Amino acid sequence: MSLQRRLLLYLLVCAPLVWGVALYFSISRARHEVNELYDTELIRLARQVQSTLSPSYPGATPVLPPPPSEGTREAGESDVRDLAVAAWDAKGRLMLADHEGAVLSRRPDASGFVDEKIGGRMWRIYYLQSFDGAWLVAAGQDAYERDELVYGLTVTQVVPWVLVLPFLLAVMAWAVRRALAPMHQLTAELRRRKADDLQAVPVDRAPAELKPLLGAMNGLFDRIEQLLVRERRFTADAAHELRTPLAVLRAQWDVVRRAGSEAERTAAEAKLSAGLDRMGRLVTQMLSLSRVESGVAPALTAEVQWPRIVEQAMSDCLATAERRRIELACEWPPRGSHPLPLFGDEHLLTMMLRNLLDNAVRYAPEGSSVVLRIGREHLELENEGEPLSAEQLTRLGERFYRPDGQQEGGSGLGVSIVRRIAELHGLELQFGPGDGGRGVKVTLQFDAAHR
Image 1 (cartoon, helix red, strand yellow):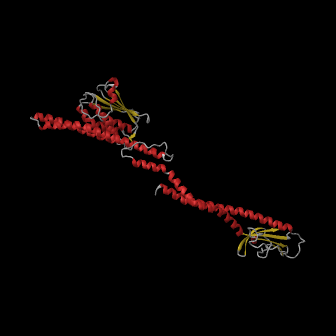
Image 2 (cartoon, helix red, strand yellow):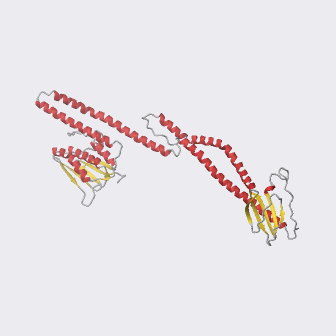
Image 3 (cartoon, one colour):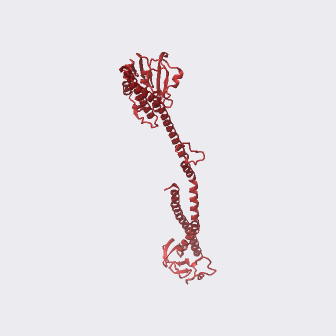
């Protein structure tokens, strides 16, 4: 069911209910006011009758003049037959009655208002005792007269509302459609958009109720656009970087096929094997980069156990370190201090540390050392290679960027992967010269938001 139909249904159901409750209280209040008015008149009438009575009143039972007949000018709009007055002396003799058709019953012990049936109809009677007990006066009124007045007043108020109800419903339907017009406009605008149109929806003229929704939609559009940009960049980078290695592999394969001697074939196969290793490393690095830049943040809820991560990362780089005779060392904080307390994904952190160690081992001079220091608030990795210039340090982390003069193979993606994993864990990556101005020092520490 649409929101517009739901609102109209609620209005159609709730409006009559509210009117019914209001009508009930209106009738109750009107009946209270009418009873108060007529009860006051009955009390005044009884007192006036009693004030005219005296002990010297003749013994005969007088009867007041007969009421005017219905429809005559003297009767006016009222029906005087709905009123009755009677008076009795101390001996119970009826001394006064307005007419014989509705004689009120004598109740010697009654005082105040009494509801009683007379002639099959309910009457409200007021009994007034004299101070000396010589007279008992009763003034009564048919209750139907009061209900008729209450219902007459109520009908005069309800009938106009009932007659206006269709017009009111039409106005409410128009008002609902008018109020929901911005939603219809937004729906139409989104339907007209192309799949690649991720521009933000204007929120300046939107109703206050729609601004949170539009803000969330614009945030979603922005995240989708960033994801598409990353995918396009990754696709373009992959197409660019894979083209050269494939061409080299094809050329090396042709050399292997055309080798004239065993020595030429062995040399060509070695180059082909090295090219395949480089291709495998490039694909692995690109898949890792695609994973960390997918936009899906892992659950960073587990407390990081750095000894396990360091052991795994160093084991992965041990073969390269032995080949180049690099000594790997790790320095931990003093006993009793927790090394870099962090909640995160240990698999990603192992990948991050492995990339850092691999770069440090590959680009360190043969026979030197690589030192990993883990403190309470930072992590440092330092080698003894040639220092990099300020421009090279600035460009570290760019995709597929490798400083000139490198003898070891690489893809230029390792630092990009490290930087992205660090950002996911609230860390920032810094490069600088090592102690004494030699080599490169990499520092990982908490960023400003998590520091």
